[in-house]
Length: 262
Image 1 (tube, helix red, strand yellow):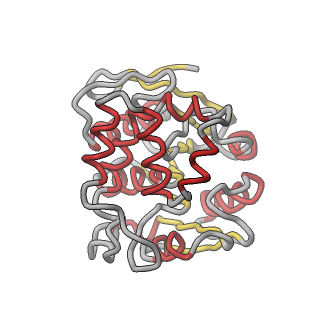
Image 2 (image 1 turned 60 degrees about the vertical axis):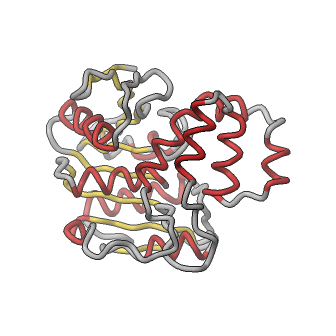
Image 3 (image 1 turned 30 degrees about the horizontal axis):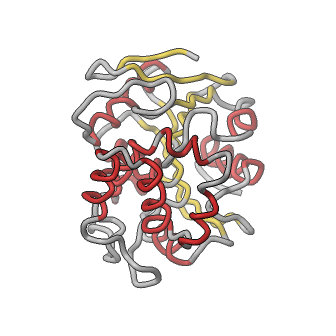
């Protein structure tokens, strides 16, 4: 593990695996640098793979007040450490952070995203209008477990009875440990889970260097959201939001080495 320092001085912890062109993996809600399973090792024969703790998580620092631009600057610091330009792959809300970074001028030569959780139609209920405010209040009040539950039921769509059972699982404590960063993901998503179409032209400039992936076994709402983006699209058969690294890795290798998919 090593660290880089973002524009505001925040230390961002990262790990580097493999050799070759730099490929930065950007995690979604709850994810830390060690939560990508076998994916870094599967990619390491082709790339210098960087995994990192997003600010507020793991061994990374945090600086108030939160702003999406600060997370973009975190990614910029990692890209500079990698040599000044990089490939980037984003998962879930981390995919939206990566999209924002690329659109704001980060030195991302090619970008892939897996299932950004957009809600662009009526295939599922949109987030409540006060979602971010309520989530932030729960965090501010120290109600970490309730914040996790609110995120899982309202943003992810997990049934309440299932979430109640999850509270007794060993992994619940790990989720609570980073619950204070859930409003960060809410800020990154903005109004893209409102049930309305994505803003026209927001990411159009990325179309010629963007791969958008979804899982064939995923819910229709998240697949519809992925298809609303410009770029090259590919569905990974049999996969859902918890994509198998052994299925994902070949798609990324094809795209980042040739610009195409198999």
